[in-house]
Image (cartoon, rainbow over all chains, first blue to last red; front, top):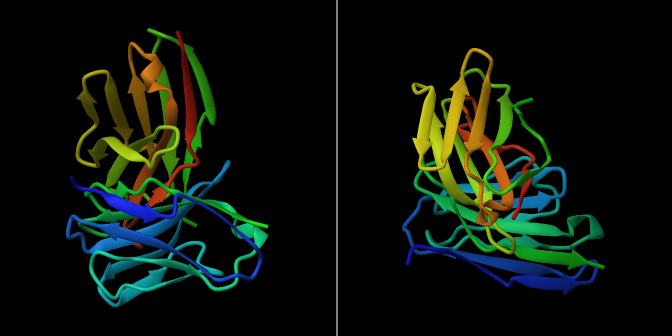
Length: 114
Length: 112
């Protein structure tokens, strides 16, 4: 089954404690991205990757890091989480950057930073 | 900057009625407009999309219309059912950045 898998689904952490949210896709997609979803703000792109070892900032990259060492994996790293990073996070993959191809989303990770 | 505005933010309809969600975009060079449905506890899923060379597209009870001149596109759901209750996102591809920009979402509730 074609899917994007994120882990964990729920995470509560304390300010400043480094964490990683994993994302894996089994569709051999080149393009992967991370979004955060906040009430009234919709989906905002954090980082994206067009291929292995190629990553770039999205609209809200501050406080986040990513890596793309393998085509299927695209982890999101919060080196020093803060309460304003409390949000619902989605990983997505697609065949191309944005034009004309379906983006497949993971189930989401609800992060709470206290 | 590039943005997509979506209205309304919430929409409540009676089962069997129609629902319309509207979006406007800023980049006149945008050429791809997908709609995603997000059910509770799940990630968004593509339900229909339209490209700039087409004015309307239908798939059973859902349809999307595009007015390039006005930079508007809309999602129409007819004969709504309780399972249509979800959050709907519109999006537009931005030619300059070659990525999708999402609207802020519409929470649709269909009452039986």
